[in-house]
Each structure stands twice: as C-alpha cells, then as structure tokens.
Length: 189
Image (cartoon, rainbow, N blue to C red):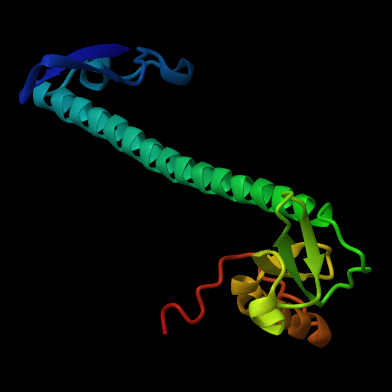
C-alpha cells in the first residue's frame, strides 16, 4: 500500500512511502480485530517514514556520486598514464631508428647528435669528451635499458634506483603474503 506524503519542511516535494500490505486473515487466520492491526496510525508516523525514505535516497545519491567521482579521477589518471606510454614508445621508436654505426648494447649511455642536414645519429662520445671541437649539435644523452627502452640522462638515476629495488625483490624471491583482506599495518601505528 503506497501513500504519498508531503514533508512539513518541503511542502512542494512529495515522497511515496510503501506500507506493508494488510490482510484481514493473515496466513489464513482471522484476527480478533482487524481494525486494530490495519488502522493507519498517527499521520506524523507517515511523515517520519517519508522523511526516512527521502534521507535514504539522498544518501544513496551522495554515495553513488562520490564513487563515480573516484572512478572519474582514476580514469583521468589512466588516460595520463596511457598518454605517457604512447609518448615514450614514440620517443623509443625514433631513437631506435636514429643512424648508428655501432651495435647498441643495453646498459650503455649513447649520445644523440644532429648534423646540419637534420640527420640524427648516435655516438658513444659525449659532448664533454668532444670538448669545443664537437662537430654537430648535441640533442641529448640516453641510456639503453635491457628492455630496449631509452631513458633520458636526467631520469637515469631514478630509473636505476627503481630497477635496483626490483632486482632486490626478485633476488630475495619474496612472495606477497596471502592476505585476502586489506592490510593497514603500519598506517595506524
């Protein structure tokens, strides 16, 4: 049985309250006084029920909005990550196609120069080693990683530190503990 109720503090807005269906013979048994069990009580009880239903709707909407906001933030973050991956892949492909007369070996630093003809090429000689007699424009220094990606010289230290951590984890062969529940150890201490 649905009842539509206007809340006292919001007369222009109505809320529908669903009450439990009434029966004069519940489970096939006639009650002593169906009037006593089926009568509508105090009208303020309906207002309180309507208020509670409305509050529930508002909380559900707020929770859904909060969760969607978190998901939207995660999507933006993933889009930024995807953009960076694509930019790094393009840079790495361009560097692999730069002219080079030596076999490039992972773990070594290579120096990119550009000729007046706009041809870019790799050398193992740094601008510092060339000194003032550097024959072409220096473009940048890159380290060839073991996964065949290139790391700009200003990011090499950070990347090497990350790789050292990964190597340490792999050498210890430490497995993650078999937790099936969130672990907040260290956060609350």
